[in-house]
Length: 92
Image 1 (tube, rainbow, N blue to C red):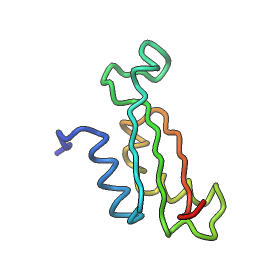
Image 2 (image 1 turned 90 degrees about the vertical axis):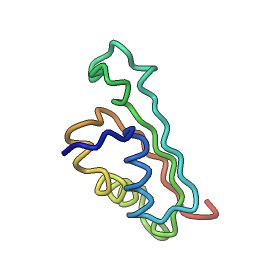
Image 3 (image 1 turned 120 degrees about the vertical axis):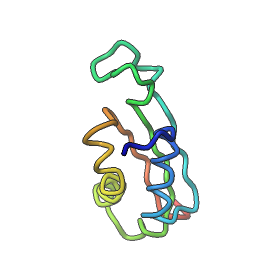
């Protein structure tokens, strides 16, 4: 059964479990895309994730984004139209 929790809360929980971030912001940008392609009317289609994690130390930008995408894979396939990722290691 699909969760009734806000998508941002689900994303934050998944990223916390997968990456143990020292900082995490999940920002809903959907209001800036209302009426555009990919706007499904839910108000939860476009997101920005700002995440800092020790898991990113020594990884390229692409490898960091892959870890975020893996944590959110099923949501990206079904509920998230667009995701901007800002991923950094501590001290960057």
